[in-house]
Length: 109
Image (cartoon, rainbow, N blue to C red; front, side):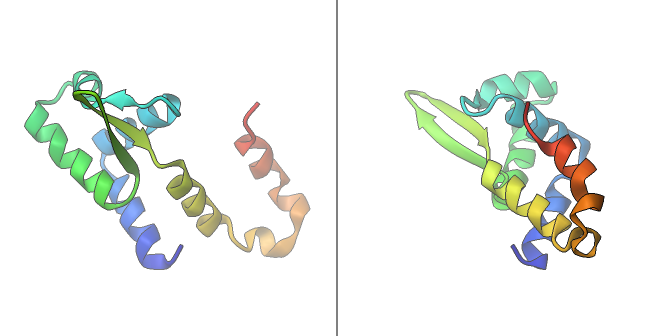
């Protein structure tokens, strides 16, 4: 990941609705949620929410899949991983002991 990609993702996540939507999608991986379910959870109108969804899709945070008649939205976990690696690269000047608390927090148990 380069700086421009990281900035695009961070900018997309800098809005409360988009950040909470991304958190919601991460919690529902790998199944994802229909666009209607996400709109209902957001409390916004379909048209307002679609603007937020477009911003997240452009940043590469959301993957849209057609399942039957529904559009399913999924968090792009690869983009999240790449952003986290970009931010933590060269963490603590190579001292693994200093990064251990961060790694422990990130591990899925």
